[in-house]
Length: 275
Image (tube, rainbow, N blue to C red; front, side, top):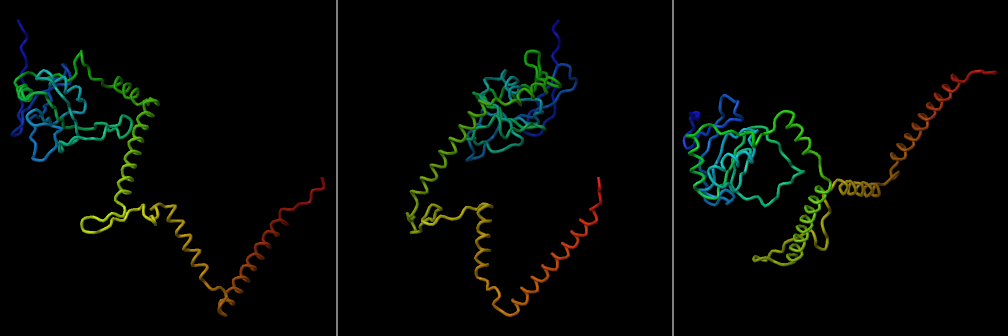
């Protein structure tokens, strides 16, 4: 006699369908993913195409993009899975994600956009609510936890120097290319009036502006200080002569007192040592 399949149907907000999932077969109570067909506003990007994208809420931290791909692959061919901290506009990111820099670790529940190759995959995914709980960690596809997860995280944290150098070199090449394009565009627009007759002033003109750095500001302040010192008239008035003499006498008295204290200390430390 075949074992009966456990059916769990959870309540979901309006417009959503609740899909029961479990971390493993030993887990008693399921967790619910809230899914619905992703709807785009007018003028939005095409990273999440309409009628083929499944919007998933309440994704636990231990559920990765690979896990979602495996869970929903029974509904149809999965084209991509995009996981985010919160819902956002479906715009394609031209900037490639780095493997070594700006790596964020999932610390809470997230949202996901599952893109199928055909619209029938979205309808089949919503129909999974009538089946038993889906297992995230199985014997054939286990999810690492505990010490195994720490070991894998440590092994992944070891940086391959050659791969890191290749990524940095590629980034610097893109950056240099971008700077060259900006400089060429600025040189082309220099001195050329626009439609209204205005001429755009760039930093590559005859007198380029000073760089806004701390070292440049310090040099500018030092030059201003020297300029003011040259403009001041020293000992021009009689009261300036008196102030200068008074300060000189005060300095001499201070030095005389310091010398007296130094001599007294030397005398106190001097002792008669015949042997």
